[in-house]
Image (cartoon, rainbow, N blue to C red; front, top):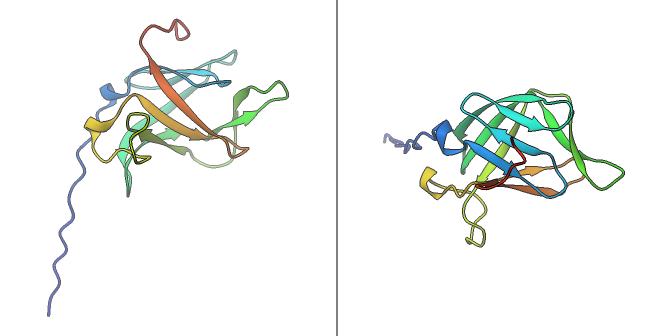
Length: 133
């Protein structure tokens, strides 16, 4: 008896779908361009990224490994940690009864990053923000 497995291919997630200025409370703003992510803070760090499907959703595969860490004043900053990178989960509209998108069309301009203290920070794309200028 032979078993044949058929795996559905996830649709590609184009970089142009995530381009924009993103903000999260108490965290540095991020400008996502077609080729890199620019962290809006004094050090002006830049990250490489690739939007891609994961086993259960879609993510931004971000390199190098910068993790959000809390500071004494209640803010978060990105710090270099060991590893090659992180996966940032792309999210559907707020209030949708699931926590990950299943198809590129569900992306709402939101993604989450887990900080070193376990807090889940949700970044939201801005249309009128001047924080990325």
